[in-house]
Image (cartoon, rainbow, N blue to C red; front, side, top):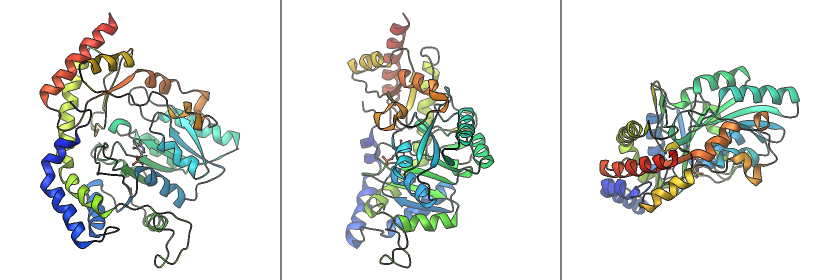
Length: 376
Ligand SMILES: *Cc1c(COP(=O)(O)O)cnc(C)c1O
């Protein structure tokens, strides 16, 4: 059993993927070929965005809007610490300071109350200028965009939805971009919508921002690529990866539906056996990048599962604010207790759209057995 099985998905669409790659090899436009524009327009349809720009990674997708807005030294950007390092890394890379916000214990997403307090604190201190918020759709579950967008608007802050794990998630049928200035995703192979290498995309409804980000991703080009009007970088999605993603996007809604069925089955079986099962808002849809529960001792649980050849993973045992590279940055209230608690108790179980019911049952039996042992 694989933690995330990419082979079964590939077997399902192998002829289409082979044909797509073959087409790129035939026309030879490896950079910015027709597949890139086609994918961007399909992603815009899917994500209800006016503009989509593909780029080299989910990290660059976060970096480019910060660069476009001129965020830098003296600026504060608010983000959760319970996330992949890239969320905070891009803030430090542009010379601004990440301010770490605690999570809601039930969703693992940025806590609007902790966020409000942090903004007030930064304003009253006067050392940094609040500029933006990066909310993360952790494990695929959309953040509380209704409240976060209100806080962003009240404080004139930009809002980025880091949907690297949650691209395709919705709240009341709306994508995070409905509330955010920018939504980003990653096509890293293990993400819900992944390619066969690195890649990312940025969604926005802002015409001006879209133009600036396209320039930044192509060495700050102006009229053409030998006219450089700003300091940019090189951040593009390969045509071959776009060709692969076109085929994967075609089955993505079906895969999201399959993930809902598996998560519901996991939830029903585990509800009375572990400390916490993932709760999703009534009209919210998670992409279930991870199916994550809380247990007393996740290390012991991982060992018990491994003994039965069941893979598991722990995201994230050391939150970003406790990483040595980020130790100088501020945490809201001086400590992030919900973040620390989650980091010590979460464990993620095998989850992908092709996980058979018998494999699900094998996982459930082993988890329940190990959980009962921890309770005893
Ligand atoms: C994976 C991930 C990223 C970075 O994506 P890459 O494509 O690996 O650069 C950013 N944020 C979150 C929450 C992620 O999970």
